[in-house]
Structures are given as C-alpha cells and as structure tokens.
Amino acid sequence: MQDEYRSLDGSTVAFDLDDVVQVAKGYSQLKKGWHSFIVYDVPTRAFIELRSSPPDYKGNSADEVEEVTEQYVCATLLIEPSRLSALRASPRKWQLVNRRV
Image 1 (cartoon, rainbow, N blue to C red):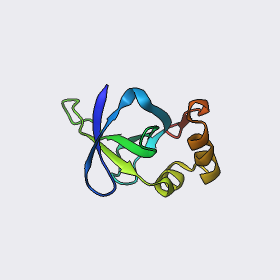
Image 2 (cartoon, rainbow, N blue to C red; image 1 turned 90 degrees about the vertical axis):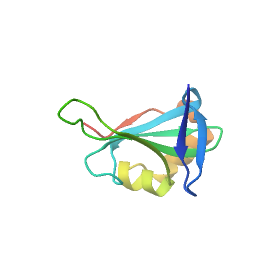
Image 3 (cartoon, rainbow, N blue to C red; image 1 turned 180 degrees about the vertical axis):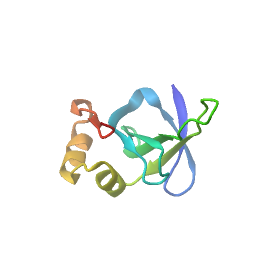
Image 4 (tube, one colour; image 1 turned 60 degrees about the vertical axis):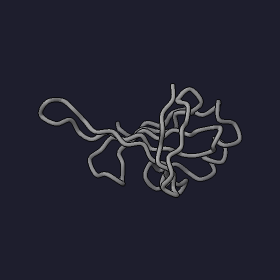
C-alpha cells in the first residue's frame, strides 16, 4: 500500500506501508493532543510519524505523515538510541512500543 510523507528537507517521498516496521505509538510533540504512530521505513532508513488529530464533533480527524529525526523518536517516546541502532541492524526483530497506556 503506497503513501507519501514530507521529508526533513520538505520534499515529498513515496513509501510502501508494507515495507515499514511499526516502532511505537504515543502522542505527538509536534501537534499537541494528536496521536502519534512512528514507523521505520526500511528502504529509506527514515523514521516517519503518522499522526491523527482528535476527532471533531462529527467523528472526523485530520491526518499528517512526516519524517522525524532519531532524536525526536528518543525524546518523544523514551526509546534509548541503542535500541534504535538495534532496530536499524535487525528491523524484523523489533517489538512495538506502546506509550499510549
């Protein structure tokens, strides 16, 4: 399944959701109150935040997809840099981190 994200340099990058590793779910620090779902795109080695706004009175929410830095992932979701290095070395062994509990 194809999607696009805004890269760190502002360009639009296509990626395949079937190629990503689910890293963590939590709350975005870029958009307060929004849910965050961080994935790692194996082919491009990019961390991507898929975020959703809280639903409005009709149940609709906005979505955004943007590349984030490793530092952002560590600070926002409290994941040690060494764990992200392990993710890069062996992405398929990663276990999803849930910070929404």
